[in-house]
Amino acid sequence: MRVLVNPEPEIAMAHGSITPRVKRTTTSSSSRRFSPLSCNTLVIVLLVATILLLLHRNSPSPAASSAPASFSGDLRHAEFSWNSLPLSLRRPPPVSLKIGVFSRKWPASAVPGGMERHAFELHSALASRGHRVHVFTSPPTSGVPSSLYSAGASEYPKVHFLEGTPGQWRCGEAFVMFEEENKREPFDVVHSESVSLHHRFAKQVPNLIVSWHGIALEALQSGIYQDLIRAPDEPINPSFNHSLGASIFKVLDEIRFFRSYAQHVATSDSTGEMLTDVYQIPKERVHIILNGVDEEKFSPDAKLAKSFRQEIGVPDDAAVVLGVAGRLVRDKGHPLLYEAFAELITSNPKVYLVIAGTGPWQQRYIDLGPNVIALGALLPSKLKAFYNAIDVFLNPTLRPQGLDQTQMEAMLCQTPVVVTRLPSIKKSIVVDDEFGFMFAPNVAALTETLQKVVAEGSRRLAERGRKCREYAKVKLTARKMAMAYERLFLCVKNESYCKYPLDFD
Image (tube, rainbow, N blue to C red; front, side, top):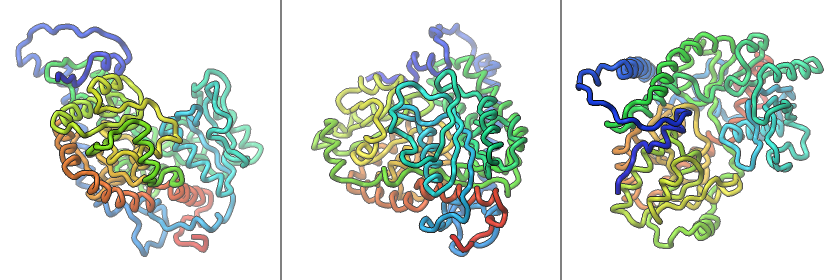
């Protein structure tokens, strides 16, 4: 079987233009080695490698992410994730906050993305705690199911949609709507999902908290990974090289304007280190709160697993069932998984891959034959069945930005994971080898890892899955995330709430 690492149609989609592959003229080895494109990329690689090395040397051990059992003091000085705090869900908050939220997207389809689901789960959980949440977001798409992702019987969260082209975010107009509501009754705190609120407005909002779900330095690292999986005889795409070079200036811009935001939430431990060590944000203004998912929607269910396997056609004699979910695109690592799985099934004919998602690589997977079961995009109501039906969840992403919802959903369903060895994952998610497997972002490493997975078998993988759920229930739930944000918002509202513990903890 001939396997292509980077089929030509994907180049067009990845870089936004369709350009035919042109046969290169023969050049000497020295001219190829020292071309402007190669030199530019080399400088970027060396720069990022130096930054990451410094971060690695200055990084605390993974255990530092958990709160000490006897912690007390000012939470603004905490160097662990706030999810670790044993905050009480049973006790109501001391005050009801009026919270303003800027979010580019809000769930507006039957199959929302991870960012939209995160925004909905967080702010709905805060509303259920009695806080008055107002969300300012882009115009909804047509045909949105009326009962999906709505406040239901509750008045909050109250969503303020912009008018105009569906899905088009216009920060200036959203800020005008925010100011009108702020005049009626001032907001206690304001939350921006990434740069939804532009930095030119941020200086006007002293009680602002911004959550970073990906920063330019991480995107630069992603670009390097994507270039490294390029085939030896494949020319570098000029537009890709340009974007990689431009990302250096994006990092510099971010370092300059991030200080406009009053408080910063890092959604992974590694992002927190970058914000303090590279972006030079004072430690007391950087707070680590990991993303979380709804534990009521994602839980182990053996009966559901069996019925879903039958529904999608997994053979009864399947040795190991792998699963992957999300967009089937290059930066999600599908060139790696495609080639690694193609190699795996040549010697393991009873191993199956279940794919929940769509994208350029979907048909290529299907062409591998009956060992691939492609489901297309799944409704959120079907995801629990999907995670339960597989033996291990794969996340071969080349994007270090943020933390994918999917791997946390899988862990809550008691499913172990195979994930790329990225700083955000190894310091915040797979903090114990028992949770699964990590691999370097290349085909050989992934292929070797999948061989180990198959060799372990479903029974050993199930043992790993139980450990995953134990950890996820403690740190990766939507409730734990919401309680951490609530405590931070209270702290921003009134610094007396920055002390820990207090009577309501």
